[in-house]
Image (cartoon, rainbow, N blue to C red; front, side, top):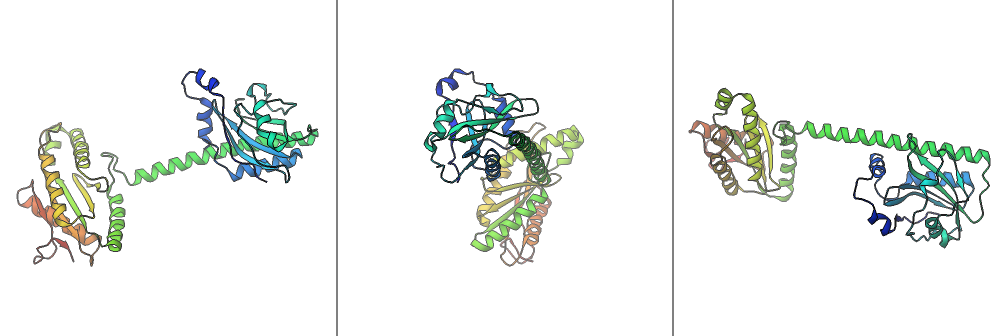
Amino acid sequence: MMVATTQIRQPPELRDSAPARQDPRATRLAQYGLSDDTPDPAFDELACLAGYIGECAAALICFFTAEDQWIKGRWARRGAGCRLQPPATPLYDISLHQPGEILTGLAVDGAAQLFAPMKLNLQAAMPLCAPDGEVLGAILLADRQPLKLHPRQSRALKLLAAQILEQLELRRTLLGLSQANGWLAQQAVTDFLTATPNRRALDKRLDMEIARAGRTGDPLCLLLLDIDHFKAVNDEFGHQAGDTTLQEVARTLQAGLRPYDFLARYGGEEFAVLLPATNLADALVVAERLRATIAGTGFTYGRLTISIGVSRLDPASGAQALTMAADNGLYRAKAAGRNRVLIGKLNPGDPSGSARL
């Protein structure tokens, strides 16, 4: 029988009197992926094992911060009852613990309130201590009668406590690996200089938006942008200045886009912008606004202009055609004198700018 989930806080007078500072125990528990009283089947199984070892009516696995107490594992024998009301006082007095020792004969108000509906009393507690001795939590055993633990039971509970701590360390390692993998995955699709998505991310997003457009029938447009005479910035001020310029341009472009538009660094001094649910006429408005914004912005190393090619998705074509058409528009914009927006097309007789091969 499972015990209801509870979150138990210290009385307000205890919380309010403490100075506002970070709780090192809460920080440590967060490293183990523990931050609330969300039920955890793994801890329920460990609580069940603790109950069998102690031959008691109910067992809990709890963790403590300066303000909260989280019951992460819970088990109760059939017939013991399971309606628990959160007590207003602590379940367990951390100051009583002795490293590696099982405490018995406890009289803790919080535990008495917690187990009273089940007509049980807290009979034993096995502290869960970190390697440096800090108490992170406890295994609590409850029964109607005092528990007379055999030495074999005591050893088994101590081994269980050690296993729980090993499980926590394993959780921390896996959580760290997961975070590191997430960071690496993010880096794989992020341009490290401008912090915008890179070409790989653009390719993935382009495929996704084309599929979405196919389902919804919404239009999709692509802008390819190139910073005019960017080489002159590097030649006159150095490559560090060029890097700064790319960062400033990326921020300026991003600020001029809608939340669902997608800006990516395409390569070198080129950027790409995906415009979902945008027809060609509106895409030209967006492109012209971006062009005018860049031309009117005073950057660290002087004024800049950009050339932009615009294309719209043809339902019969795919990503390659859309990109080639935008590239055609960019090429023609630069050939026509730069600092302008032109529609790209792959077929000379197509005036619409659609990307049809």
